[in-house]
Each structure stands twice: as C-alpha cells, then as structure tokens.
Length: 445
Ligand SMILES: Cc1cc2nc3c(=O)[nH]c(=O)nc-3n(C[C@H](O)[C@H](O)[C@H](O)COP(=O)(O)OP(=O)(O)OC[C@H]3O[C@@H](n4cnc5c(N)ncnc54)[C@H](O)[C@@H]3O)c2cc1C
Image (tube, rainbow, N blue to C red; front, side, top):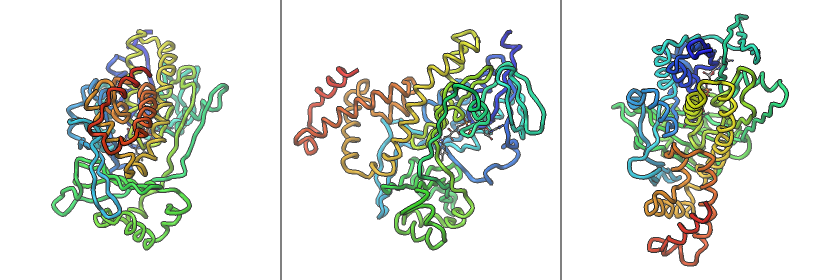
C-alpha cells in the first residue's frame, strides 16, 4: 500500500499528537486526529489559566523541521538561567549554559493551538470531543465512547500519561508496565503582571525558591505574569495536607517564600481554585501491538524536573519520521526499530528527571554543589568538546542521545568526586591544572 493510500489515526491532539500529525501529513499520509476535549482554539481549557513549559533544543528541532520556528519564536520567552531566591529574598543567578544558550518558556495552550492550526492547514482531519474507549489492535479499529467506529491502517496512541490505548495493551499478554507516583504533588499558582502590565520579577530566568524538602518555581508568560508551581509532599511536615486554611497558607508562604508572597495577591484564591495534582513516571514495553504504536507520555510519562517531557515527546516524532524515511515507510520495521531505539533513551531521561528533583529543591542552595557547578563551567569553557555538563548535554545537545548523556554524566560525576577530594583544591581551584581530569575522562570513554 502506498503512503497516499495509508490512513493513520492519531489518538490525542495534545502537543505530541499534533506534532506527529504534521510530520505524517507532510509525508503524504491521510491523517485523522481524535481528541477527547473540545477544540482549544474555540473553548478555553483549564479555566483559562496560563500554564507554561520549558521548551529546549530537542523540542525546538522538530518544530524547526516542520517550518514552525518563526511562529513559535513569537510565543516564547528565553530563560538564560536559574534565579535562586533564598529565605531572606536574596537572589543568585546561575546561567544554564554558555553565552547565548537558553531554555524557553512557552504557553502550553498557545503552542497546542498553533500546532493544531498547522495540522489543519496540512489537510489533517481534526475530530474534537471524540473520546476513544477501546481498540482492536490487529484490525486497527477505534471504538469511541459514543459507539461510533473508525478503521485505520496505523494507529498512534498520543493520549498522554493516562493513555486509554496503553490501558488496553496492559490487558494483553507479555506487556510490561509500571507506574510510580512520587510522594510529592504540585499546584499551579500565579504572579500577576504589575499595574503597567510588566513582569514583577526578572523576566529572562526560571525562578526557584529551593527549600530542601520542597520548592516553588516560576516561569514567565508573555502577558507580564508568571506561572508558579509549588511542589510539596502530600502528607507530613510542610505538606499540602497541612495547608488546609487561608491562615495556614499565608503563614507558610510568609515563612518560606516571603518575597514571593509579596507579589502573589491572588494566592489564596489560586490555592482554592487550582487542583493539587500528582506526579507519575510511566514505564512500559513493548510500545507496539498489531497496528498500534504508543508515543509521547503514553509510552514514557516522566516527572517534570528536567523540563523534558514534551521535549522528549517531540524527539519521538522526529525519530519516528527519520525511521519512516530510512525504512521506506515499512511500518512493521519502523515500529520495531522505533521502540528499540527510543526505550533506552526514554528510560535515561526518566531516571534523570527523578534525580533532578533533588538538585532543584535542595542542592542548588548547597555550597559544595555550587562549587562543583563553577568547576564544571570552567572545564566546559576550557574543553568545550570534551567536558560538557550533564544539564547541557540533556538540554542543549539535541544531537546526543539521552542514554549517552546519562552515561557520560555518571562518568563525569565520578571524576568530579575525585577532584573535590584533592587536598587544597577548594581554595585553589581557579589556578588548578585540569589536564589530568580530561585525560582521565578520555580514558573512561
Ligand atoms: C507540572 C508539569 C510541568 C511540566 N513541565 C514541562 C516542561 O517544562 N518541559 C517539558 O518538556 N515538559 C514538561 N512537562 C511534561 C509535558 O507536559 C508532557 O510531557 C507533554 O504534555 C506530553 O504530551 P503528550 O501529547 O504525549 O500528552 P498530553 O499533553 O497529555 O496530551 C494527550 C492528549 O490526549 C487526549 N486524550 C487522552 N485520552 C484520550 C482518549 N481516550 N481519546 C481521545 N483523546 C484522549 C488528552 O485530552 C490530551 O489532549 C510538564 C508536565 C507537568 C505535569
């Protein structure tokens, strides 16, 4: 069957489903996309709240390939580093990478709308308020909640971390699955724009209030506001469970985030109105069954602490497109190759995302950790092709697989442990000779 005669159904019109739809339409497939929610370009989802995400190089590359870079550029605010707020409100700025390197704050809703409009312009049929309830993997039939059917040659499940298609796979044999909820939840809050419509905090930064066991972060929006996310344990000391009255919320913020409290006039209302949500890591395998393949969060949902969930989902789309090219659109070969290639990479970023929570909420305020970061930055400056900090490999090196970045990061960590143990190093590191460090690194790769 030729590409032009092949019908692809995509379940889920979120970020990943709409990017994949655009890639496939460009290849000449007949694409139908089904989304459970109403069209976000017409009706407001999430009650009109601005929710933003950090878009970095791995996510940017597919958008560029789809010719969307100029339009996405208008939606983003570059964040060049972390702005740390201590309990007294003092600020410290840590650049994310080298000069010119930044991650980008983008509105989830704005990006999704842009992608759906692009998909529509490529001739993709968009079916909103279409909830998939069941699937026949071998025949390629989708059954909808209203009792209607749709038959396709290929079905892609881009229906998110709580995927219905994955749920149906879980009921088949030799399908492995795990879900792991961390003991923390999150709540979205807001710092509105000031009276002139301007940002009340430094605009080109991701703000963090690290407090050891919990943290608050804030990403800028184009309208002058910031979207904040409070990450707290569900239960125990300093937990959501304890923030059960307006007095408790205000006194908690006064104690731990006093400078944030000053710029959050709607804190109590936001706290009441916005849900407390959980954070899950989803691992499963295989990702394909008959005519169905899972992509994005449906196959590898991760916690948000590396800002890579959407980025890795977009990378899925780019890799899938490359494999279709390589295997002349032979889907049986492509599905197999895709899951074999992507599984180790998505496992790596799932692990790194869990580990980065500790770094964000705790270590960014630790002197030893900050010194390591400074030394790493020096090594990166001196040997830019040899010593690349883990954060930079994950965030700015879209040509490097996550699994490779993770392995190199582990080796670098071991070498850095040795560096830190050297006598007198802490005091004299600025004049130290680092050639042995680079030799050791070369010997370990
Ligand atoms: C608090 C938080 C912060 C995050 N921050 C970042 C960040 O900074 N950077 C980053 O890269 N990632 C971030 N992420 C991760 C990112 O949100 C996800 O990885 C990304 O949204 C995954 O896209 P997706 O299209 O696979 O799934 P989703 O965005 O969940 O989309 C799935 C779509 O499928 C639809 N659907 C579900 N079931 C059905 C059904 N049965 N029938 C039809 N349609 C269905 C849903 O309505 C939805 O539109 C964050 C996540 C969280 C929770």
